[in-house]
Length: 122
Image 1 (cartoon, rainbow, N blue to C red):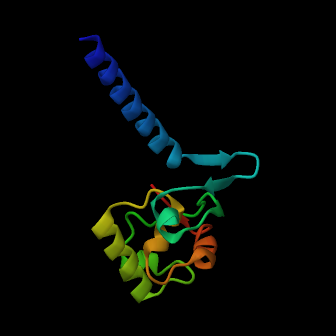
Image 2: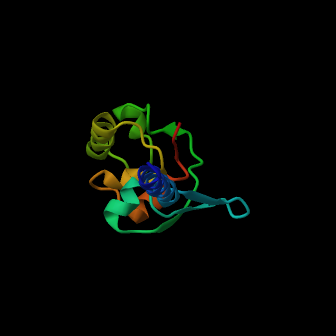
């Protein structure tokens, strides 16, 4: 009976450790002194194999609710890119982190950095 309890405790400990590690992997670190975010391991950056330093979005166009016309008011976004943003949003849900926009064809790290002063994620 004690052997079973010992095995149960070891398995439970391993599962808790794995859960804790998965939470650490998606940790978002914000440096409030510089208003920069270290995006270490969110979904897009992991897929892209990147670690980015970007500013927190400070603009007014909410990419999670904007239609094609509103997205086109953002410098650098035309009709085609606006449609891709909406398609990605409809396919995978709201953009949680700025780097999630990297999954949209036509948006790379340089474009994303230019967009940050014009967009918000709400």
